[in-house]
Length: 146
Image (cartoon, rainbow, N blue to C red; front, side, top):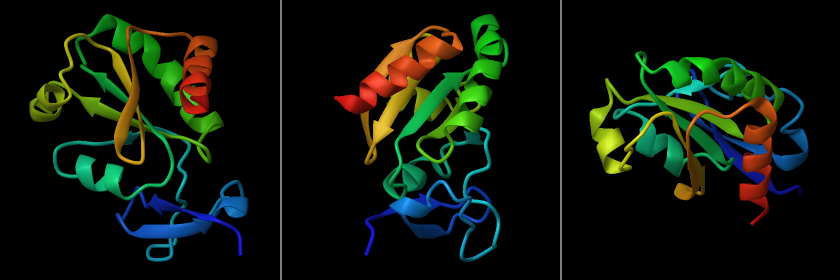
């Protein structure tokens, strides 16, 4: 039997076990039958952040941002593009630091945008500032290869 990864459904929150060799085959949620990988960043907040981090077997890149932040707005299309390209390997999530101030404080976000990469619920790397597509992809790949 192939090793599997736990993937939390972005729609209903059910935890799905997906064989590694099927991650790139557009798996569906066993509960709501929606696609597990939606090809765009998911919104995380106080109500679902910890549960999501504890129950997904894929690495998660979190963009801590705010609506008034110019560099955040510049980087948003880059983040969305990579979310579509890498959706079966890495989950892309966004946390609005204005509405989720407790999370911003908990993770000591001092400037935005700040990107944090989590694996198995633990932060493994962090980068402050906007990045272009190539730089962001390289940062993710280098961080995951450590």
